[in-house]
View 1 (spheres, rainbow, N blue to C red):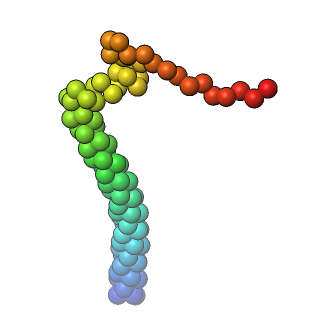
View 2 (view 1 turned 180 degrees about the horizontal axis):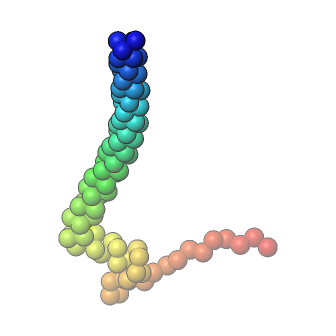
Length: 95
């Protein structure tokens, strides 16, 4: 009878080990999948930020040119050179 108990105990230990292994493997797979999803999301965000940085660098370059500064002053601030007259065309109103 003693050897049957050892065999049952051995089988029980093997089954417990397999259950633990499957559980651990499954949990790790979920963690890996979540990390991959986060990596993809961060990669997309990084690409977006790189593009935004390039755009801002171009704008900085433009801001260092007199012609662009003049264009901004005219368009956004409504400034004019001495002697210039601004004409604004209003939308036509039908009565």
